[in-house]
Image (tube, rainbow over the protein chains, first blue to last red):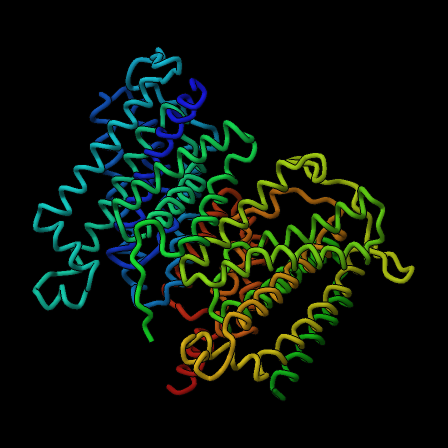
Length: 290
Length: 312
């Protein structure tokens, strides 16, 4: 029982991270139908910048804010320089562009920060708390709380504000949104900024646990993508649940079966799910277009 | 088709001439890897360019070919040719297992399923240490032996690989210009319309998927004997992405374009090594720039530029 609880805690922590990254995927996908394979690099940038600013002894809140802001700017820059000029290209060409961007950003990061992991001090106390026999580090609780707050804030933004509603309208039908007088281009920019920011947030809060390395984004990005697909790719609720389901199942598989195959477990889950329910847990079955 | 034969003969002549002129072993090694990439890309081009199905897991088939050949010859003393056939069997079975359910999926979901498959296979290579040697790799793979002849030098492998490439390309070109190839192109444009014409689209997709997996597996088997050492690091997600990138950068719509992509992206890193630490940066930038300005790939893009130039 304690064992299960322990695995659950670690699953929830990584699940929260996957959920944030998956949300980033769905935001860009809804705005542009681009699968952004550079999403993981936003996470890496968030973590790296946090490490740098913490190293400069900036106060923590300022370090976080700067890390997220700079990554959001990177997101905007990417949209302007690489996605917008190619917006009429085929989906596979756009995917290759984002893969190229990912290689580019990773190369830049290696160049700026080097290959060694950068340490990040824990934001809150380091003493583990024991809950019903299992232990949990305070940082994990912070990860969960931050993720929940971020998800709820984002949900409120999409449901309650005019801009958020306009973004949802664009996702549903871009042409119809235009007809209603919604300017699509700034919204796409906003989507990239938001998506980069939320992924950077994932990088910020995970950095004290995993430390920051230039190549940490690849696997995190792929897992986040899996979570987004699990949730149906367009649904933000789906993305969040997909992230937690993936994190928890992965932790259970690693704990009870074999930790060596932990990275495989996430993808086995994904493939099985795709075979049983191809449109994702929360995706709607699309009518076939002829 | 006549034009294609001519192009094939020119390519063959060029490759053979290169083989006779070149005396540098390092160049042969680079060319050998290039040709093996070319083999994978031929299959992938049929799958992506003709049938319109994206696979982000082809490094797994490449790896399955390499590891089956490697393990059977190094650990069980099987002859390389027998191992190569067994490797084809293993690759095809794996392709069937993943292909049958995955090919029902569309677009991004198919890409995701093959991506997941690729990572699972990579993790198995890395963790099944008793068989694969784990992260430190599999050593002691004997050189290729066919009918008493042992391939020892890079140059000998080069001529063998050129032969395999030309034969595969010839077969692929024939296939692409056959009714089967036209059915694939139709499938690319509209699955429903192809079905309405009486084609079993599921079977079409599966056949071309198996074919591309078999070619990747063959390239892997050859690679294992040529390199005599394999490690999981040669069969990662990044390698799957590299194969897809070659096809797209070259031009997804034609076999020649895909081959051009294999040439450019195999040689580019070698050329860029002069920039040392900057090489990845430049590689990424070139990739993005090509795709923005020539979204249909180098082959068609450069062709169009050339035509425009001629007109003005």
